[in-house]
Length: 175
Length: 182
Image 1 (cartoon, rainbow over the protein chains, first blue to last red):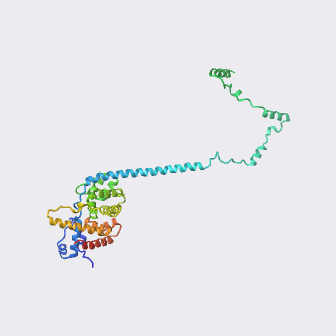
Image 2: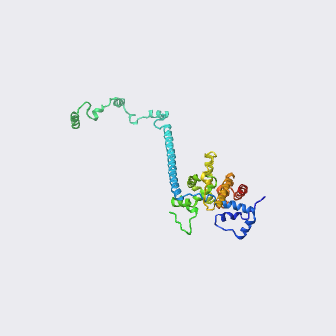
Image 3: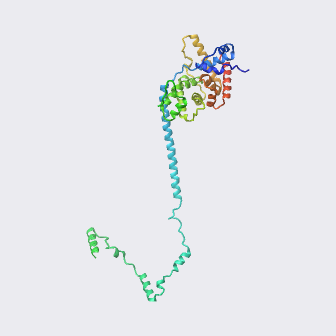
Protein backbone atom coordinates (compact mmCIF):
# COMPACT_ATOMS: atom_id res chain seq x y z
CA UNK A 1 0.00 0.00 0.00
CA UNK A 2 1.51 3.36 -0.97
CA UNK A 3 1.49 6.29 1.44
CA UNK A 4 -0.02 9.67 0.74
CA UNK A 5 2.76 12.20 0.20
CA UNK A 6 0.65 15.28 -0.43
CA UNK A 7 2.11 17.27 2.48
CA UNK A 8 5.29 15.31 3.03
CA UNK A 9 7.75 17.65 1.31
CA UNK A 10 6.48 20.70 3.19
CA UNK A 11 6.55 19.15 6.65
CA UNK A 12 10.16 19.93 7.68
CA UNK A 13 9.78 23.62 6.79
CA UNK A 14 6.52 23.92 8.76
CA UNK A 15 7.89 21.90 11.67
CA UNK A 16 10.94 24.18 11.95
CA UNK A 17 8.74 27.28 11.87
CA UNK A 18 10.07 28.56 8.56
CA UNK A 19 6.67 28.15 6.91
CA UNK A 20 2.99 27.63 7.78
CA UNK A 21 0.29 25.29 6.51
CA UNK A 22 -2.08 26.71 3.98
CA UNK A 23 -5.81 26.26 4.52
CA UNK A 24 -5.95 23.53 1.88
CA UNK A 25 -3.04 21.70 3.51
CA UNK A 26 -4.68 22.02 6.91
CA UNK A 27 -7.89 20.52 5.53
CA UNK A 28 -5.93 17.70 3.93
CA UNK A 29 -4.12 16.91 7.17
CA UNK A 30 -7.40 16.82 9.02
CA UNK A 31 -8.78 14.19 6.68
CA UNK A 32 -5.72 12.11 5.75
CA UNK A 33 -4.56 9.58 8.33
CA UNK A 34 -1.28 8.96 6.48
CA UNK A 35 -0.29 12.61 6.41
CA UNK A 36 -1.52 13.22 9.97
CA UNK A 37 0.59 10.33 11.27
CA UNK A 38 3.64 11.52 9.35
CA UNK A 39 3.12 15.07 10.57
CA UNK A 40 3.03 13.81 14.14
CA UNK A 41 6.37 12.09 13.63
CA UNK A 42 8.00 14.98 11.82
CA UNK A 43 6.86 17.58 14.36
CA UNK A 44 8.01 15.32 17.22
CA UNK A 45 11.37 14.77 15.51
CA UNK A 46 11.79 18.51 14.99
CA UNK A 47 11.24 19.06 18.71
CA UNK A 48 13.38 16.12 19.73
CA UNK A 49 16.43 17.20 21.71
CA UNK A 50 15.47 20.87 21.92
CA UNK A 51 16.12 20.65 25.62
CA UNK A 52 19.68 19.50 24.95
CA UNK A 53 21.84 22.55 25.41
CA UNK A 54 25.40 23.01 24.31
CA UNK A 55 27.30 26.22 24.80
CA UNK A 56 29.21 27.21 21.65
CA UNK A 57 31.08 29.77 23.77
CA UNK A 58 32.57 26.93 25.78
CA UNK A 59 32.88 24.34 23.01
CA UNK A 60 34.40 26.75 20.46
CA UNK A 61 37.62 27.74 22.28
CA UNK A 62 38.26 24.19 23.51
CA UNK A 63 37.71 22.88 20.03
CA UNK A 64 40.05 25.40 18.40
CA UNK A 65 42.71 24.61 20.97
CA UNK A 66 42.44 20.92 20.10
CA UNK A 67 42.55 21.63 16.37
CA UNK A 68 45.63 23.82 16.78
CA UNK A 69 47.37 21.17 18.89
CA UNK A 70 46.51 18.46 16.36
CA UNK A 71 47.81 20.58 13.49
CA UNK A 72 51.02 21.28 15.38
CA UNK A 73 51.48 17.56 15.99
CA UNK A 74 50.72 16.82 12.35
CA UNK A 75 53.35 19.34 11.18
CA UNK A 76 55.86 17.81 13.59
CA UNK A 77 55.10 14.31 12.35
CA UNK A 78 55.48 15.45 8.73
CA UNK A 79 58.81 17.14 9.55
CA UNK A 80 60.08 14.01 11.27
CA UNK A 81 58.99 11.87 8.32
CA UNK A 82 60.76 14.20 5.88
CA UNK A 83 63.89 14.28 8.05
CA UNK A 84 63.94 10.50 8.18
CA UNK A 85 63.69 10.42 4.39
CA UNK A 86 66.58 12.86 4.02
CA UNK A 87 68.73 10.90 6.48
CA UNK A 88 67.88 7.70 4.66
CA UNK A 89 68.82 9.19 1.32
CA UNK A 90 72.08 10.56 2.73
CA UNK A 91 72.94 7.17 4.20
CA UNK A 92 72.16 5.50 0.89
CA UNK A 93 74.33 8.02 -0.96
CA UNK A 94 77.21 7.51 1.48
CA UNK A 95 76.93 3.74 1.12
CA UNK A 96 76.92 4.10 -2.64
CA UNK A 97 80.06 6.26 -2.59
CA UNK A 98 81.80 3.73 -0.37
CA UNK A 99 80.93 0.91 -2.72
CA UNK A 100 82.08 2.61 -5.91
CA UNK A 101 85.89 2.08 -6.39
CA UNK A 102 87.90 5.28 -6.36
CA UNK A 103 89.95 6.11 -9.44
CA UNK A 104 93.28 6.27 -7.49
CA UNK A 105 92.76 2.93 -5.82
CA UNK A 106 91.49 1.15 -8.85
CA UNK A 107 93.37 -1.54 -10.75
CA UNK A 108 96.71 -0.45 -12.26
CA UNK A 109 96.34 0.42 -15.89
CA UNK A 110 98.65 -1.56 -18.10
CA UNK A 111 100.87 0.53 -20.35
CA UNK A 112 100.65 -0.90 -23.83
CA UNK A 113 103.70 -2.98 -24.60
CA UNK A 114 104.18 -1.26 -27.93
CA UNK A 115 104.54 2.15 -26.29
CA UNK A 116 107.20 0.87 -23.91
CA UNK A 117 109.12 -0.69 -26.76
CA UNK A 118 109.00 2.52 -28.74
CA UNK A 119 110.37 4.44 -25.75
CA UNK A 120 113.26 1.99 -25.43
CA UNK A 121 114.10 2.41 -29.09
CA UNK A 122 114.38 6.19 -28.89
CA UNK A 123 117.65 7.41 -30.21
CA UNK A 124 119.51 10.62 -29.29
CA UNK A 125 120.56 12.21 -32.60
CA UNK A 126 123.42 14.39 -31.08
CA UNK A 127 125.25 11.25 -29.86
CA UNK A 128 125.13 9.59 -33.26
CA UNK A 129 128.39 11.09 -34.40
CA UNK A 130 130.16 10.98 -31.04
CA UNK A 131 133.41 9.14 -30.64
CA UNK A 132 133.56 6.17 -28.22
CA UNK A 133 135.57 8.26 -25.75
CA UNK A 134 132.89 10.94 -25.70
CA UNK A 135 130.22 8.34 -25.16
CA UNK A 136 132.22 6.88 -22.27
CA UNK A 137 132.44 10.33 -20.68
CA UNK A 138 128.69 10.83 -20.98
CA UNK A 139 128.02 7.44 -19.44
CA UNK A 140 130.49 8.18 -16.63
CA UNK A 141 128.52 11.35 -15.81
CA UNK A 142 125.37 9.23 -15.38
CA UNK A 143 127.24 6.86 -13.06
CA UNK A 144 128.67 9.61 -10.79
CA UNK A 145 127.23 9.54 -7.24
CA UNK A 146 124.76 12.32 -6.40
CA UNK A 147 125.88 15.22 -4.27
CA UNK A 148 124.62 14.78 -0.69
CA UNK A 149 121.48 16.82 -0.02
CA UNK A 150 122.86 18.27 3.18
CA UNK A 151 125.74 19.85 1.29
CA UNK A 152 123.38 21.65 -1.05
CA UNK A 153 120.63 22.59 1.32
CA UNK A 154 122.62 23.86 4.27
CA UNK A 155 124.36 22.80 7.40
CA UNK A 156 123.38 19.71 9.31
CA UNK A 157 121.79 21.10 12.48
CA UNK A 158 120.56 17.92 14.10
CA UNK A 159 121.61 17.57 17.73
CA UNK A 160 122.54 21.29 18.16
CA UNK A 161 121.07 23.72 20.67
CA UNK A 162 119.49 27.02 19.60
CA UNK A 163 122.66 29.19 19.84
CA UNK A 164 124.72 26.58 17.97
CA UNK A 165 122.04 26.44 15.25
CA UNK A 166 122.12 30.24 14.90
CA UNK A 167 125.89 30.23 14.63
CA UNK A 168 125.85 27.46 12.08
CA UNK A 169 123.26 29.31 9.98
CA UNK A 170 125.26 32.54 10.08
CA UNK A 171 128.43 30.83 8.98
CA UNK A 172 126.51 28.97 6.26
CA UNK A 173 125.03 32.24 4.94
CA UNK A 174 128.43 33.95 4.95
CA UNK A 175 130.13 31.09 3.10
CA UNK B 1 38.54 38.48 10.71
CA UNK B 2 35.20 37.59 9.17
CA UNK B 3 33.02 40.59 8.48
CA UNK B 4 29.37 39.76 9.16
CA UNK B 5 26.39 42.02 9.10
CA UNK B 6 22.91 41.40 10.47
CA UNK B 7 21.32 41.64 7.03
CA UNK B 8 23.80 39.54 5.12
CA UNK B 9 25.32 36.70 7.09
CA UNK B 10 28.18 34.89 5.40
CA UNK B 11 27.42 31.54 3.84
CA UNK B 12 28.84 28.37 5.33
CA UNK B 13 31.08 28.05 2.27
CA UNK B 14 32.55 31.52 2.87
CA UNK B 15 33.09 30.73 6.55
CA UNK B 16 34.80 27.47 5.66
CA UNK B 17 37.05 29.29 3.17
CA UNK B 18 37.87 31.93 5.78
CA UNK B 19 38.74 29.22 8.31
CA UNK B 20 40.96 27.51 5.77
CA UNK B 21 42.71 30.85 5.30
CA UNK B 22 43.40 30.95 9.04
CA UNK B 23 40.47 33.00 10.35
CA UNK B 24 39.54 31.58 13.76
CA UNK B 25 36.55 33.91 13.99
CA UNK B 26 35.02 32.01 11.09
CA UNK B 27 35.51 28.75 12.98
CA UNK B 28 33.77 30.20 16.02
CA UNK B 29 30.83 31.26 13.82
CA UNK B 30 30.55 27.76 12.32
CA UNK B 31 30.44 26.32 15.84
CA UNK B 32 27.82 28.86 16.91
CA UNK B 33 25.63 28.02 13.91
CA UNK B 34 25.81 24.26 13.96
CA UNK B 35 26.79 22.96 17.42
CA UNK B 36 23.19 22.92 18.64
CA UNK B 37 21.92 21.06 15.56
CA UNK B 38 24.69 18.48 15.86
CA UNK B 39 23.83 18.02 19.55
CA UNK B 40 20.15 17.41 18.75
CA UNK B 41 21.07 15.00 15.96
CA UNK B 42 23.33 13.04 18.31
CA UNK B 43 20.75 12.97 21.07
CA UNK B 44 18.04 11.82 18.68
CA UNK B 45 20.37 9.14 17.33
CA UNK B 46 20.73 7.61 20.78
CA UNK B 47 23.57 9.48 22.50
CA UNK B 48 23.22 9.96 26.24
CA UNK B 49 22.56 13.49 27.44
CA UNK B 50 25.68 13.51 29.59
CA UNK B 51 27.86 12.55 26.61
CA UNK B 52 26.53 15.21 24.27
CA UNK B 53 29.12 17.92 25.02
CA UNK B 54 32.04 15.59 24.39
CA UNK B 55 30.45 14.05 21.32
CA UNK B 56 29.64 17.43 19.77
CA UNK B 57 33.18 18.58 20.37
CA UNK B 58 34.61 15.38 18.89
CA UNK B 59 32.32 15.58 15.85
CA UNK B 60 33.24 19.21 15.20
CA UNK B 61 36.91 18.41 15.79
CA UNK B 62 36.75 15.71 13.12
CA UNK B 63 34.91 18.09 10.82
CA UNK B 64 37.45 20.90 11.22
CA UNK B 65 40.33 18.50 10.68
CA UNK B 66 38.94 17.56 7.28
CA UNK B 67 37.10 20.69 6.31
CA UNK B 68 39.30 20.78 3.20
CA UNK B 69 37.39 17.76 1.90
CA UNK B 70 34.01 19.52 2.16
CA UNK B 71 33.39 20.75 -1.37
CA UNK B 72 29.91 22.10 -0.82
CA UNK B 73 28.00 19.40 -2.74
CA UNK B 74 26.18 18.69 0.51
CA UNK B 75 25.17 21.45 2.90
CA UNK B 76 27.52 21.89 5.82
CA UNK B 77 24.71 20.92 8.19
CA UNK B 78 24.08 17.56 6.53
CA UNK B 79 27.83 16.94 6.20
CA UNK B 80 28.25 17.58 9.93
CA UNK B 81 25.34 15.28 10.73
CA UNK B 82 26.96 12.58 8.64
CA UNK B 83 30.21 12.97 10.61
CA UNK B 84 28.25 12.90 13.87
CA UNK B 85 26.53 9.70 12.73
CA UNK B 86 29.88 8.09 11.94
CA UNK B 87 31.23 9.19 15.29
CA UNK B 88 28.29 7.62 17.09
CA UNK B 89 28.82 4.41 15.16
CA UNK B 90 32.51 4.41 16.19
CA UNK B 91 31.57 5.06 19.81
CA UNK B 92 29.01 2.29 19.71
CA UNK B 93 31.63 -0.13 18.35
CA UNK B 94 34.20 1.07 20.87
CA UNK B 95 31.81 0.33 23.70
CA UNK B 96 31.03 -3.02 22.07
CA UNK B 97 27.39 -2.34 21.59
CA UNK B 98 26.74 -1.01 25.06
CA UNK B 99 24.27 1.81 24.68
CA UNK B 100 24.70 4.63 27.11
CA UNK B 101 21.54 6.56 27.88
CA UNK B 102 21.71 8.74 30.95
CA UNK B 103 19.05 8.53 33.64
CA UNK B 104 18.19 12.19 33.21
CA UNK B 105 17.06 11.54 29.64
CA UNK B 106 13.69 10.44 30.94
CA UNK B 107 13.39 13.31 33.37
CA UNK B 108 13.21 16.29 31.06
CA UNK B 109 10.53 18.61 32.37
CA UNK B 110 9.94 21.80 30.47
CA UNK B 111 6.19 22.38 30.22
CA UNK B 112 3.83 23.57 32.90
CA UNK B 113 0.94 21.17 32.17
CA UNK B 114 1.79 17.77 33.70
CA UNK B 115 -0.46 15.87 31.26
CA UNK B 116 0.96 17.64 28.22
CA UNK B 117 4.41 17.20 29.59
CA UNK B 118 3.90 13.50 30.22
CA UNK B 119 2.47 13.03 26.72
CA UNK B 120 5.39 14.94 25.17
CA UNK B 121 7.90 12.93 27.15
CA UNK B 122 6.10 9.75 26.20
CA UNK B 123 6.11 10.64 22.51
CA UNK B 124 9.78 11.68 22.72
CA UNK B 125 10.71 8.44 24.44
CA UNK B 126 8.73 6.40 21.92
CA UNK B 127 10.29 8.24 19.02
CA UNK B 128 13.80 7.82 20.38
CA UNK B 129 13.18 4.14 20.95
CA UNK B 130 11.69 3.81 17.47
CA UNK B 131 14.66 5.59 15.91
CA UNK B 132 17.03 3.21 17.68
CA UNK B 133 15.31 0.26 16.06
CA UNK B 134 15.73 1.65 12.52
CA UNK B 135 18.61 0.72 10.25
CA UNK B 136 21.29 3.39 10.49
CA UNK B 137 20.76 4.84 7.02
CA UNK B 138 16.98 5.14 7.50
CA UNK B 139 17.48 6.79 10.90
CA UNK B 140 20.00 9.30 9.60
CA UNK B 141 17.97 10.18 6.52
CA UNK B 142 14.83 10.62 8.61
CA UNK B 143 16.56 12.88 11.14
CA UNK B 144 18.36 14.93 8.50
CA UNK B 145 15.08 15.45 6.72
CA UNK B 146 12.51 15.76 9.54
CA UNK B 147 14.67 17.33 12.23
CA UNK B 148 17.34 19.24 10.35
CA UNK B 149 15.21 20.19 7.35
CA UNK B 150 17.82 19.10 4.79
CA UNK B 151 16.80 18.58 1.17
CA UNK B 152 17.04 15.10 -0.32
CA UNK B 153 19.85 16.23 -2.63
CA UNK B 154 21.86 17.44 0.37
CA UNK B 155 21.24 14.25 2.29
CA UNK B 156 22.19 12.13 -0.68
CA UNK B 157 25.44 14.05 -1.20
CA UNK B 158 26.36 13.75 2.47
CA UNK B 159 25.59 10.06 2.71
CA UNK B 160 26.92 9.13 -0.71
CA UNK B 161 23.64 8.00 -2.23
CA UNK B 162 21.09 9.38 -4.69
CA UNK B 163 18.22 11.75 -3.88
CA UNK B 164 15.75 9.05 -4.99
CA UNK B 165 17.32 6.51 -2.66
CA UNK B 166 17.31 9.04 0.18
CA UNK B 167 13.58 9.60 -0.38
CA UNK B 168 12.96 5.85 -0.27
CA UNK B 169 14.92 5.55 2.99
CA UNK B 170 12.88 8.38 4.46
CA UNK B 171 9.57 6.74 3.54
CA UNK B 172 10.69 3.38 4.90
CA UNK B 173 11.63 5.10 8.15
CA UNK B 174 8.27 6.91 8.35
CA UNK B 175 6.39 3.69 7.69
CA UNK B 176 8.28 1.83 10.40
CA UNK B 177 7.99 4.68 12.91
CA UNK B 178 4.25 4.91 12.35
CA UNK B 179 3.99 1.33 13.51
CA UNK B 180 6.18 1.93 16.55
CA UNK B 181 4.93 5.32 17.71
CA UNK B 182 1.26 5.34 18.67
